[in-house]
Image 1 (cartoon, rainbow, N blue to C red):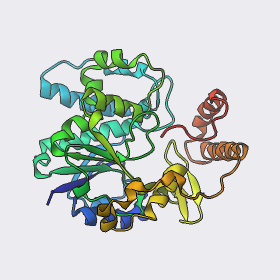
Image 2 (image 1 turned 90 degrees about the vertical axis):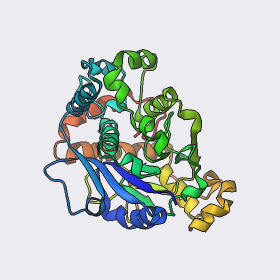
Image 3 (image 1 turned 120 degrees about the horizontal axis):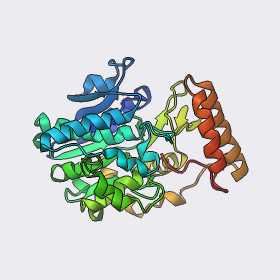
Image 4 (image 1 turned 90 degrees about the horizontal axis):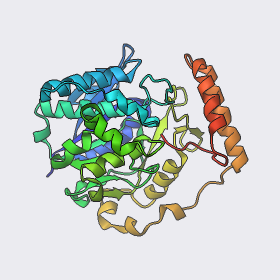
Length: 352
């Protein structure tokens, strides 16, 4: 039997909602150990079940400027390689959500740069604490997934491939969940390395495109590491959730879903997971392979609001959270500018 380590990145948010399904559908199904690679602050809840059950914990302080965390990682890199640090901030000329959380002249409405840093934090911990060699497969995921079906058994996910869910790619490759073997873990997780060590080279490759989200950035990274041709997909059987009273993330507000009693962050993801959960209920369902002929896109959907109504709802939610939450008024001006620049006909969120 393969030894499996499930790794939670960035945060342990939404644990009140997600821990029961996570422990049953992921940890127990895979007979896996748990690791955390997260950033924390003075208010971090150490009583949360992810922290309490983790066998390994690698943490970094959550700064106001994620650029400070990139500087820290670069310092470690340069000490290990015995080189002088290049100016990685050259890469900030590459615009897009990938740099969310780094203080710049044009700040992004997200904290996605934390995902880059936490991948480094995870890989650094795996290597320097001698953990990498103890496991055969690594499942890199998030704490705010509600799992509607068991994680696919590794017996149907061959080791030579890198596995991601079949959706939420946003023009690249989804960064929300990854199953990777020990042999491929280092190149797959080293997303930040070339930013910090080879910014001139990376900038030269990416400067011709105007906008980069994390999904496009990840796909480019996998391509340059020779991993992209070996990426395969499995059905989306989980969705991102948020408690009604929980402060939303800096990008996706989500929408309350009465059928589950909490906020669903991405409607298409929820609908896809719900459709697949109707045909995948157990490990045997995975192994039988009947789901391979199931078309989740053809599954019945709840009636959707008109395009104009969706736009009004989206606008109302963004205004509400921009103005009501502490510390958000300063973001309202940026929200208005983004709204005015939004392409005609777009009624939803385009990327994470």
